[in-house]
Length: 455
Image (cartoon, rainbow, N blue to C red; front, side):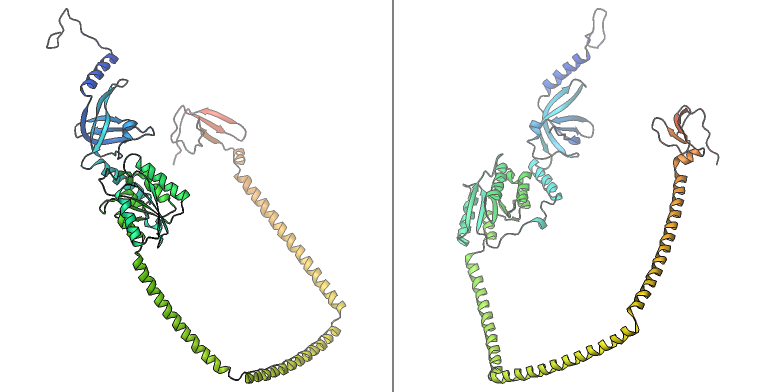
């Protein structure tokens, strides 16, 4: 073969097998494209339970498959989505069984916004949709906590600022510091464990989760889903005081109260002792004034009551006269009651003489016998009507019995093998198998001719 690609008489072509050609293409591609950067838009993104990420990277003119395996995907701070424009770094790989090539990704970053910022917004949106940040579920803080647990780094400026302000404002509060990492890969797990420890083992009034300022990367441990869920699961109110006032973390949104700085957390938790003293003095003054007013009122009432008790003998004499009057009225009432009873007894005696008990009994027996016969007649009539109605219902049920319909010459036709009942010939064709149920027995038939009904 010359440079033009034509074969000459004594030359023989090199013939590849499919696998051999694919193997050679694989070697060429993987050797020349072992480290590439690609910009494109994600589509057909999939994330199965294996933890691998599968997607297509595309632009206006072409597309290429891409995969990021779990050892790399678990370090991504954000979740890829369809339509997201990204910069990807990886190597070309060829999948020989299908002769397809793809990019095996080692790195992925969204265009226009950092990966951490995107991951923050994605997690914020997800937890907000679950109601994790709703104000209605947040617990109130105690007015003046007696014991506070602080989860933070024991050597950072945050704990020094917090303790300094607490002791200056109200030195009688007990502070328990739980030392944890507040930055790095292990920080989130340590803070979650500390929250669990406080809830299980310590009797405190409030928990403060705090650290000083830093970059988004420095504060990233406070933007993790597991920490947000641990905060919401806490039975003790949680205050989040992370970074500076402009720093907002997921833990701030999930906490029962967000403080812009560690010092602000101390101010929100504890009222200054001087302010409390002034408030107590104000309340004490108001209480003393109220007590004095009440005592004055009681004194005036005692004066009025004492005027009515100046001559107790007169009040006793009046009471004796009132008692004598009531005694006389009671005697007269008893006398009238006895006379009325006597009169009623005489009247009832005359009535008994006029109506002999024997006559009364005979009359009652006659009435009972009449009522008995009437009741028997009513019961017999009701039973007869019920029997007739039952017989009528049995006849109607028999008419509705499919077997009775079949006995009158009808049949039930079903398709085979589905055994769906046929109501018309639509959907049937010559050669179809059907089953015909008769009053006694069944027929398996084959359709020879179809005649639609005439309207």
